[in-house]
Length: 303
Image (cartoon, rainbow, N blue to C red; front, side, top):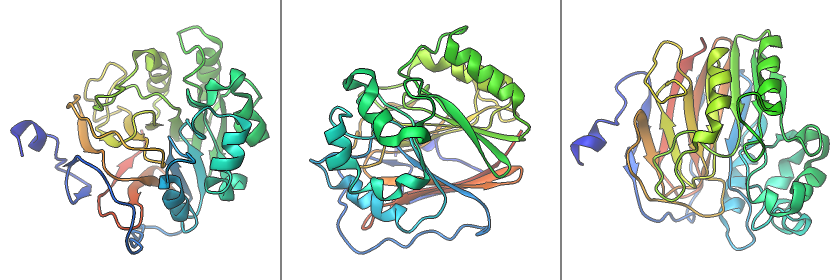
């Protein structure tokens, strides 16, 4: 392994199994992969992934089988139904798989959902669970955590309606721990799509209010970053830990070019991210689909 890849291997508090950098094609066949046992089974759970359902892929069927076995709230990280987020895409591709868990799902929209004008298929399918129709951002609480679903397909600039709403929402929250999610990642080592500077104002608002975790999709791979500032500078004291979890089932992007503060990257495995939301801390576990062995786990504290 090259020195620059070895430098990505984390040195504290968590374990990455199999390989830090795994490139190639994955096989979703085989016997069931045992789910990891969380340190605290009583903790509320959030399960997340994006880039999910396609009628031309069986990946979403495999990840939906994981949801069948995992408790908690399901957060989608955009691009819910391929190719266009049309009503028929949701009915034919998403509903038979991840739709089994619609009642406990809190979604966010992706660019493919907006291939249908106004993402009308997305808002019609998820209804009130997607927040105000046409807006695409909302918040809710899970035990000791404040959770925010945002819309990276809408205006995110400083002073925009969404950014101002986010700052007001954060100011009103009484929870110590905060997690936000949307579709386009601020940071990514993926070479097909990469990171998006346009999301920086959302990161800045979250950082200003001591948020802890941000989840995104869009790049069809899994990546974990060390806590960092909105500018991408390492900040172990109050930085935000970011995950890219574009592994929901459509296809996978294995292209990799190391980005600062990236700790783990895998472009070969469908799966979901499980977060155990403790009082003042969290545990994470990437749960692979049956027949795959890559995983990643660890823990962090809230600011």
